[in-house]
Length: 233
Length: 233
DNA sequence: GTGATAAATTGCGCTAGCGCAAAGAAGGAA
DNA sequence: TTCCTTCTTTGCGCTAGCGCAATTTATCAC
Image (tube, rainbow over all chains, first blue to last red; front, side, top):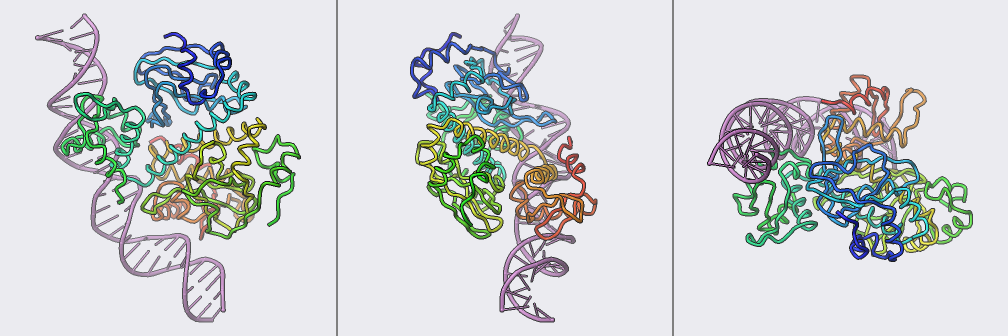
């Protein structure tokens, strides 16, 4: 995959107020990396030398414990930034999580130190980054609360709703919102097991709330999910 | 409580590189709020008009669900900033969490809009904020992973270790690290129930790992806790 | 089409941790 | 000292969800 155009780069939230000169400058200090499904842009613990902008494909940001079990922190879609924490701090940093592709993907890799330097003279960039981090903190805080207080059913419901909002494509035939995720993916996103997710989705399918297949969940009745997600008790 | 001195303000990480003029300017646009134990500086959902610097006391940042159950996101100690997310973004924002005092406390309240404006011409402030947010993201991500993957025992152990690092005071007589938290506080910090925490602490006390009392936990064998926290199993 | 591989389903037993209830400390106020 | 409030402990029963194992289904390469 080739370098993105300046106009494409403006789809990146943080770059919305960037001048063409700035974008050009950024492009000159970056490179495109294409990797295939299930491989990693970076691993938890690697030195955070680059920040990435996803150009195509899908990436999950995961964190593992010493046992090898893992959770997904979030899903990255094209024109979103990931691996940026290292650019925000002056210390030498390592990535606190890994980034694994869910499909063949390409990303623009920008040197962290370059970006950090650029931010010093470009307040709009620093504010963009703070904006990004703010949203991210809010999302993970909310998920943390859910994980601590809600049952699997509710967590899965609100995860599906969130995923639908982020990526959902109206399915042509089904008149539903189609999500491309395996049961394992959903398990990692909700803090549950593959088995529990499978049982739950089967149940919802029987009730006509969703329609599902291999690595595919089609939401037929979003409203029902909203109800389940907010079910007090 | 009266306004802090400039030297005191330099204990705030974000202000480390601030000039005396800047600090003076900040003080002029801020006010001191003193409130007693168990009351709130702000509530989840309030308009985020101020960011705070804790001057004395202790504050827990909590999030509640519609049922009224709550989790603690973190504990704030003097010279730490809280309620700052509203200052980082240009949108009108609301606090995503509440801030409740664990003791009688005082905090310096700085207008969010003032601080945001100041950041535009003071890169060191923006970088300080990004630094803060980065550390915060890393901590909550780690806790999220723990909550999803580890058992209560391990979560409590690593929570106590973390609290000890943040606040711990070498207890005179006991030759241990003393933490001032109720069972309920620990429960909210670990995503467990009061009952489970009580049982667990009783157990640890029998084993001589801790020594505990009313709203008080004294860590006698930190190393044992570290072992429990990292128990692969 | 056929075989191989990966994903999903489902039965089954188990247990970590919840949550009620009731009783027992530990302060604090007056 | 005594009362009152708040925090803590502990017994007990229960269940949500885990996790193994075995089977079924879908997809892909050839």
